[in-house]
Image (cartoon, rainbow, N blue to C red; front, side, top):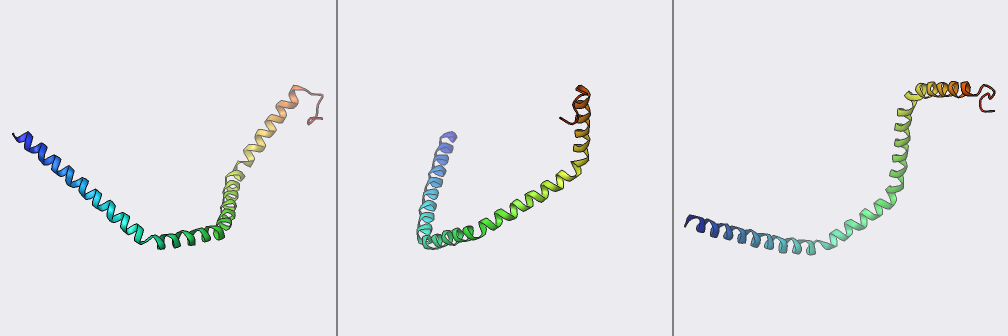
Length: 102
């Protein structure tokens, strides 16, 4: 008997939640319909700001990427130069008649 009552209570709670969610959905739909003009103005202002500030932010982002890339690349220059010298020595030792690729 207790399991049956528990099942009925669970079904009633589920029905109450479904009713509550349906009511909240209708309320949300009403509020969105009421505030639609403000939402359209927000989209319009956002689009204009994106058109004005988008290219500026793109240039700033590219500049920051170049600066960060240079900051990460410059400390590696000695290692790159050393690797080039090792490659050059190995390359020249294979064919002694060629000097620097000529």
